Image: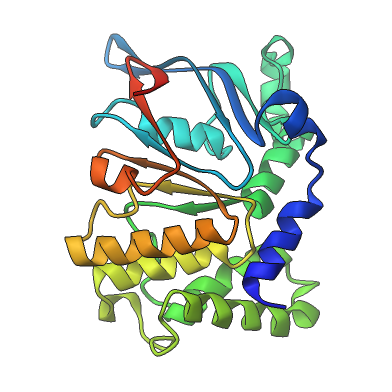
Length: 267
């Protein structure tokens, strides 16, 4: 089965009833986040709302420091909002605030919501960042494979290894790096490093790809190649949420939202 067919099958397998009823596969409602800088509180998100349909390519634009990355981290269960909730296929990601006592926070790692967040980060979301976060001592192939090793666990790895290696090879071929498998990150260009990061984000076939300024460190030619990969993924049905400050990059998406004064709006 091709990767495109597998991705379509995996997407279809998730029930659409909650999405149809509530208006989006990935939804954020009333998200607020404030940072403390010295003695000053700096609000970056002010009850922001977002709804992303299955298979949609949504771009979020905003000035530097507007809270784009914070919003993406909240959507991807990396950073908890102070107010509001995120839903994936109708299921809440974060524990209700009224139940978040000090004792509950201390035991959060054992909670149902924290286990759900771990599963979402492991299985549902794929992350691509501006800074590639590759392990310098590992080869291209190993940088992608190690994520599968972590997801699988020690006991299951012996039986899962051959399938994981096939998926890694397929994703690296997809991004045009089948000739660079044994190279280390220091031997790659910036565009090639970002393609490794994309392969790493895709190898577990995530339902949602979250991209934080994926072309921000690249020249125009390399950036265009990365956007071409995103467009090809979207054509296969991949759901993508990307933040960027570049209108040319955002124009590749189905829909562009602007984050201004902590809230999202289409312009």
